[in-house]
Amino acid sequence: MSTGTKKTAKSRARQADVVREGSGNVFEDLRVPDSGEALAKAELAIQIASAITDRRLTQVRAAELFGVNQADVSDLVRGKLTGFSTGRLLRFLNALGRDIEIVVYARGRTGRLGRLRVLEAAQGAPAGGGTRRK
Image (cartoon, rainbow, N blue to C red):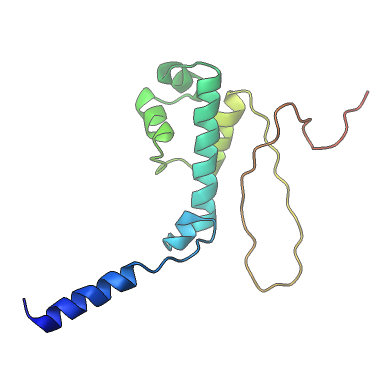
């Protein structure tokens, strides 16, 4: 190996050590198309897997609830989300007894696209985040 090649390899190694702060969305950082939706789907899948565990369901029983086969549930809980639309994941959460709220906020004229986020409500919090009627 020549000296010039060693310097190039060392230079590349130093460049690889550069650390950049992420955006908070790994899919955006990796330049995945529709990164907001990809992150939302991943977060919904986490919620589904958590609900399956909380209810102590087998994958077979969860599949029966969802109207899919066990292999689909296996893919879902392992993060293989190809073939699962956001709407379908929301239906699975409803089938697991989870309430879902979709809130749309108006933003000022920022010139940026809006974003999509999935947030988990505090356990026991009333739907709507407001007060309960008596």
